[in-house]
Image (tube, rainbow, N blue to C red; front, side, top):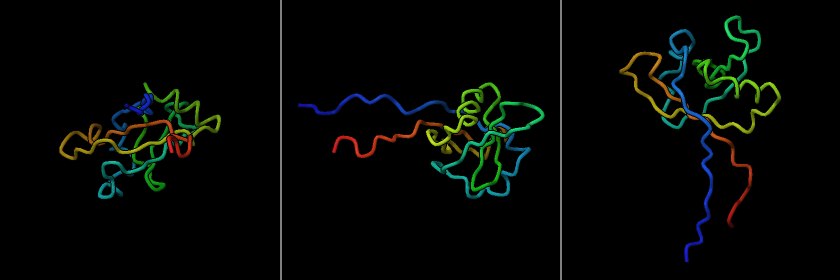
Length: 117
């Protein structure tokens, strides 16, 4: 008998990190590895995009959520729901254009505790 229950994916979105070449990513590039946790932070007062969401690694801004995808994250962060988001480096390819070197995946945090035990 199969006791596995269906679980929906926690995946919300994945994207190439925007603006890496214009941020401080080179300061930490040696530390950015597959699976590395990063933080999403709403960048209030950004003159180019009122919904700008920066991606930080250990308080170093390494880029942004691309503008076409940042509305949902900006709203969640504005209203204090950042704790439901889990962001990680999904892909690293240092041989390609700076805007395509890093991909980030964002998932919803599993806050159910010890499920199935």
